[in-house]
Length: 280
Image (cartoon, rainbow, N blue to C red; front, side, top):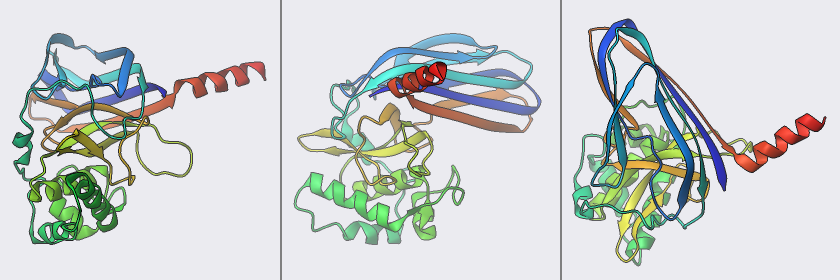
């Protein structure tokens, strides 16, 4: 599938901010499942700093904005070709030992309810079957419902509510997998959705579980599937905060607000529609 991505994040400050420093994890992963044709990252008024590939295989680059400024806009545009690898992350070079992803964070720390939920999947025949079973129980336990949780909601809180978004599904699945001694991590990226009534946003997240013999395999409880050609992977981390596409700090004492716009279009379909409109 050939996809065109547009991702814009606008930060606004009620008082002028100075010396903003941002760390951007906004470049698609290098793997057999996706190939980038072109990709541009721009920070309005910003100065691009050095970039590097971290131990998890993610490309990270730094930007600075000297200011003073009341608004900073981060814009990402690009085209990428994806293919279905049945959720398996093949050809992705990284150095971190998967066992490092057995470590809990405040967002994924299990309470008794998560421990009890993890026990419902103990009858799985093998690690891959267990991972699928865990993803299914998360899908059943937490209904997809935007607006009921926030960025700082934990897996335990989302399970108690019984509602959440993709971030909550991913955190809960990570918690359950680690309870079964399966390394698990948070993956961020984009999802191409069709006009069939799906409520999911184009900016998306899912969990990856390290399965013996296969390596990292993606599971998306929010959509009850493994990532396929509709998914574009950016990066990963222990949880949503660790895998955030944009992280930064600014000098000043003002209040920051943020607006995000994301669109993911299938290129060939977009071109066909444009040609039809021209002919009419």
